[in-house]
Amino acid sequence: MRSPITKRSILSDVARLFDPFGWLAPVIVMAKVLIQKLWLCSLGWDDELPVELREEWMKYRGELIHLQHLKIPRWLKTTNNNKDVQIHGFADASTQAYAAVVYLRIVETSTNDTEGHDVVHVTMIASRTKIAPLKQLSVPRLELCAAVLLAQLI
Image (tube, rainbow, N blue to C red; front, side, top):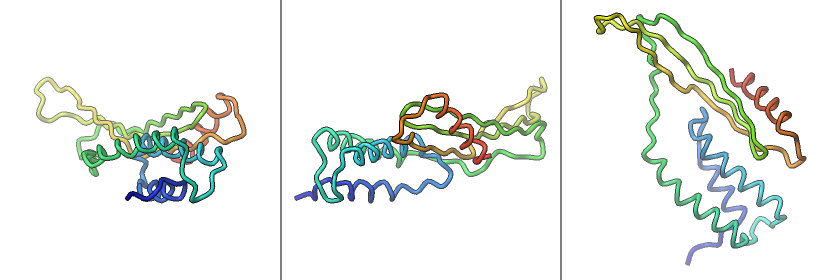
């Protein structure tokens, strides 16, 4: 018999997702939103989840199996042929969460191309997410929070 799904078991499962650079941010933010819903329900640590939240969690858990196919490149494509290197940052917010991401854009002079076309490589460096606070904030205010998160990330 399976153990019941509780706030404690969900927090334990989410804590196992180790993601220091934020590659799994879109996945983890969904879990964070669900955890916030658990706090709003005022459940005890070992109380079973309501049916709707339990189904949402089970659907989420079922999708986690796809993470095993995720491959993260470690090389940022830097070479001696770099013509231009730029850092690009983006931030966005919704009523539930806000996020920031930083990319490295490298323009490399092609040595193989007879026409002299440059090759552009774009690689994600890092990202972060945060859940919107329970105190209702406007979307423009959350956009500012996302911009601050981006500034901290850079």
